[in-house]
Every structure is written in C-alpha cells, then in structure tokens.
Amino acid sequence: MSLSTTETPDARTRDAERTQESILAAATAEFAERGLGGARVDNIAERAGINKRLIYYYFENKEALFLAVLERTYAGIRKAEQALHLEDLDPATAIRRLVEFTWNYYLKHPEFLALLNSENLHRARHLKTSSRIREMNSPLVALLGEILERGRLQGVFRGGIDPVQLYISIASLAYFYLSNNPTLSTIFGRDLLSPAALSERLSHITDFTLGYILRS
Image (cartoon, rainbow, N blue to C red; front, side, top):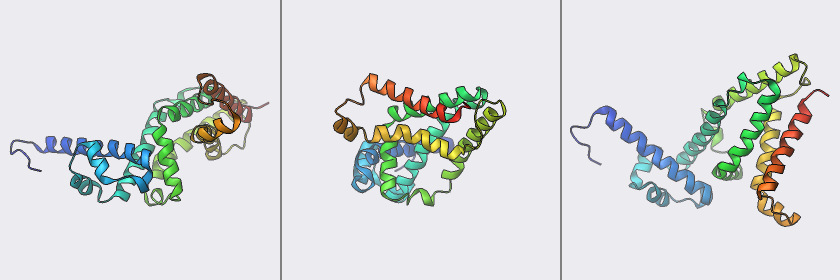
C-alpha cells in the first residue's frame, strides 16, 4: 500500500487507526456469527473492505485478532458503565441503575453474549493471555464495593456482600435468560422475548437483586 509523499505522520496514524477499527468491527460481526472456529479471515477482510494482508500486518493471526475483539468488547461495556456515574447516586439507586444498564446493554449488544459463548467454549484461553482484561474490570469491582459499603454505613444494605459475587449474579440473571432464550421459550411454551416478557424479566432481576442487598 503506497502512501502519498504529502501525507503527514498524523494522517498516516489516523489512517492506521481507522483501518484497525474497521478490521475489529468486521471481526466482531464475523466471530459473533460464526464463532472462532467458523470465522474466516477472508470474510473479515471482505466485511472491512480491505486486503486481508492488512489483518495479518496489524494482528498477526486469527487468534490474536479474536483476543483484540474480546478486549475491545469488554472495554466497550466498561466505558458505558463509567458513563453512568454510579458513584454520584445513592446506593440503592446505583444498584438499580447497574441492573437496568446490564440488562439493556445485553439486549442491545447480542454480539457481546455470542463472543462470551465462544470464548467459554475455549475455556477462556485467549483472555488468560491478556495483559489488559483484569485492569479493565478491577475499577468496576472497586466501585461496586464502595457502593455496597456506603449502603452498609447508611444502614440501607446488609453487610458481608462480595462485589464480585454480586456482579456475577446480576450478569448471570440477564445473560442466562437471553443466551438460552430459544430453548427456554420452547420448553415453557412462551415468547420470552416479547416486550411484556422482557419488561417482566427486568423487574424480576431488579427486585431479586435489591431483595438480597437491602436490609430487612
């Protein structure tokens, strides 16, 4: 790929960043649809509208690209959570907001669930090699711990709640329902993705979570 002699270093950097972002967006869609095993670099290049050699230039191989997609996906949800400014809310409202956000984020980003399903099939082999994934998630755990402690000191929340266990429970209550919806809807004979069912599920998750946390 030739570069114009008048192109500045900043322009080349922006072009490289745009190319990498195009690759990551295309790879996210490909991996979400086909999983790591079924995804093809040729398809990713076609989706991104680039020569596939650029994928190997920037990401070396499909496995490294999959990890980059996972890191980008986690960074996306963590950034969106930070925008909630939960630290500025009273403890009960903060937990309610986190539950609502998690549920709605999963609904709006089915690719997130698909990528997690794929990585779990591989026993988190890629995430285990990441130098970024824990530092991305640690601030959320710390913030949730601070919210729980504020609630305890105010006499609103009971004590002894592990923020990691709490977040896993919130995520699980949303994740399982959505990722297993085809089988759940079939065996129970209900359209669990209808607007009424989705609204009922959010209310259930919120009440279930607050019922565990709030001091009786």
